[in-house]
Length: 339
Ligand SMILES: NC(=O)c1ccc[n+]([C@@H]2O[C@H](COP(=O)([O-])OP(=O)(O)OC[C@H]3O[C@@H](n4cnc5c(N)ncnc54)[C@H](OP(=O)(O)O)[C@@H]3O)[C@@H](O)[C@H]2O)c1
Image (cartoon, rainbow, N blue to C red; front, side):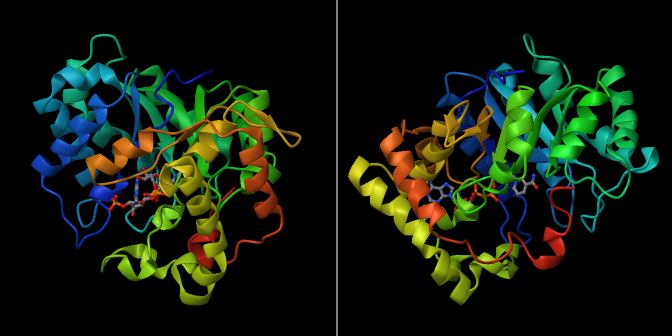
């Protein structure tokens, strides 16, 4: 399938992820309204059923309330919600553990569904955050109950391996996309077979943390606010950050020449590879979902440019000569990736 959405989506995690940085509903509404208005196709929105501390449903509630106030925007968005982990972010797999997540989504997104005319009156895409120790076949059988009941239109799998995708496809479940971290910093999917199988089977890939969690847009780790978990991540630490800065310099150099911003270069790297064959790799449809809590920045993120082959070669020459240091999260959290 092809996702008929605006080429760049919008990640909503930042509004509710830091317990020390709170946004009011009015602040959230003001940003989302401006951002949706800046797109001329349905905007891919990415939220989380567990994106909230201490209230795990804070993100969902904010999204639902937005559509209560602005029902006229309900057909202008394509909504994907992540679920399937407990309060400690450990994957849940049993029917009993998966059910409360779907019920919360249905409950809090009711204003979105009620306002829709041309989109399904249900969740466009349920994203399984992480596959735990159960088999993908078992988990999909449990989620298919909600596809049949009409609560979920399609299923997305986050951070899964090529082998898992193959098995998922064999079940006949409506796999609408695969979600993974992809950016100049994190390109595992190019080599571990995930892009290959997605391209072959026409599965779009939702690229999260496309700005390297802010670093590729020029964020200095010193400026990460208190309470933000990025303070614990490897790539935000002194020597590792200094080493990886070379990639930040690449985005800065190209940005200066093209008269755009480093964030726009980092995102254009992804949109320019979408559905393209490059250096022997077939890329599937790629939809980056940068997250900003500021409308002006997100609108800037929508203005990607077409990078020419010479630009892509320049970037890949650097990538080929350089090994990114540090794990993506922490060593413990990285263990749950590409299952
Ligand atoms: N599947 C998964 O496991 C998973 C994991 C993590 C995230 N996600 C999803 O991916 C989305 C994005 O990922 P992310 O937030 O981790 O990382 P990201 O989009 O790579 O980076 C976000 C950071 O970049 C800053 N930023 C955004 N646009 C900018 C611009 N134009 N100029 C300068 N700075 C800019 C933001 O700050 P400001 O807010 O201050 O602008 C924020 O600090 C999330 O919202 C979430 O929906 C999924």
